[in-house]
Amino acid sequence: MSSSLTHLLRILRWGRTLARYGALQGIERDPLTPPFARRIVKLARFGLRQPAEPDYAAALEQLGPAAIKFGQALATRPDLVGEKAAHNLFALQDSLPPAPFPLIRKAIEQALEAPLESLFSQFDETPVGAASIAQVHRAVTTEGREVAVKVLRPGIEETFAEALETYEWAAAHLEAHAGDEVRRLRPKTVIAHFRQWTRRELDLQREAASASELKENMVAEAGFYVPEIDWRRTARRVLTLEWLDGIKLSKRDLLLEAGHDPRALANILVKAFLRQAVIDGFFHADLHQGNLFALPDGRLAAIDFGIMGRIDRRARRWLAEILYGLITGNYGRVADIHFEAQYVPPHHNAEEFATALRAVGEPIRGLPVKDISVGRMLEGLFSITRDFDMPTQPHLLLLQKTMVMEEGVATFLDPDINMWESAEPFLREWIRSELGPEAALADRLVQWKRSLEKLPDLIDRIDHYYPAPGGAPPELPELEVDVRQLPRAGWRDLLVALLGAGVGAAALYFLG
Image 1 (cartoon, rainbow, N blue to C red):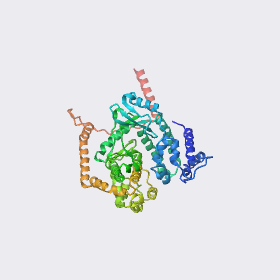
Image 2 (image 1 turned 180 degrees about the vertical axis):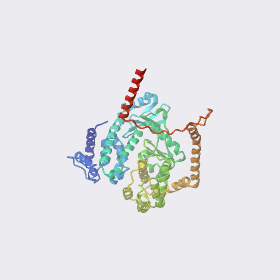
Image 3 (image 1 turned 180 degrees about the horizontal axis):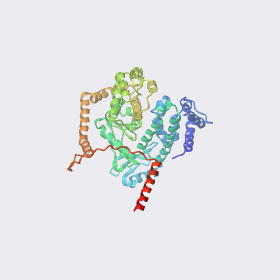
Image 4 (image 1 turned 90 degrees about the vertical axis):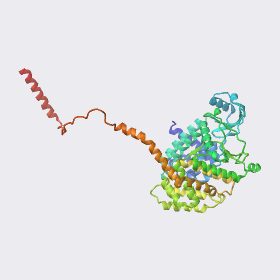
């Protein structure tokens, strides 16, 4: 465990880099910034000339892998960093110079416990991509299959552990010394979830399991493809999966040259995301253009399954009803769900909350995404969270991030797409099947079945604590005696008793 001095020196070093890019200006000017944090910012920027426009993405890229990942998480939180900063953070490329191949070769052979030549007949030493956590190499297995081999960067776990320890220290001090507004945003909880996300990303065997689960779930969505996992060549630090010959969605010109229909790809993406989030409750939470490929047959394929989100069935029903209510203008029902889910403290009024939602929702209903001011919409939504004292919902952070990212990709493919109209038929059908009378009866039958299954165990436990009478004869009745508490003896009573006993003993001795 590092000392407070170590954390402060580390923060000052990071702060120096951030200040060079003007990335600390917002923190220093924000009236909600605690005085101790403002002092650290002033110390970090002392003697530096700051640019007029901050470049948060460039600053975090300079700080390395952990900062890049943290910046990507902050990009989903305009309520924490502001809309302009969040927009800039979405530019983080997650790309770094590759690690030397001898280190990568050693990591593969240690993880898979075999020489590289016994696993692959060909292995390209130059990676096709080098991200903050891992890099990917193209290879051919000894069986002749083309594969992509993802390998964790050497020493990456230690790098993240060091950074996360300081993030947690800073978040704890922020909550302790800041006001109610900062505490409402729950920085400690945000960092705890960030630690959980990165821990999952640093286990490639778990990533392989996530890909396998998602592939099973998406069988019904023929237009969305998940590559096969090579389990023999997969371990905690190495992931081997099927090579995909496709075009990244970020290369729109190449997509058009190859004859792909961007509008069709956008609709596949929207349907695939809704199926994952609403029906299965298990979704790919990193759906940016670099992780999505258009295959030659028109299907959409995804890679990089390190960040996955999960939502339970009750939260999925709430989510579907909220989205459908916003689409159809049923703001009263949306407000009721927020109160049922306890997203809004009970001392507020549901009708007032519905009116606030209407003020945000009505101006954007029926408009294509290109005509919607996302900044104005987000400003309205985050104003609502402040006005109604709504705490951050950590279990929805990944979903919020993915929805914003997925909307951005779909809009890039088809600027005229209307996300609400694309989602409405899907949500309407799902709500009918999930919330209709048949679904209610099915849920009740499941509850009854589970209750009946508990009965045998319940009877056994009752029998254990209340056994049946045995074969012994009944016990004889006993006389009821009124037991009263004897008077408490004092020291004088005790002395008298001892003297009396002594006199009696002496008399018996002499008379005997």
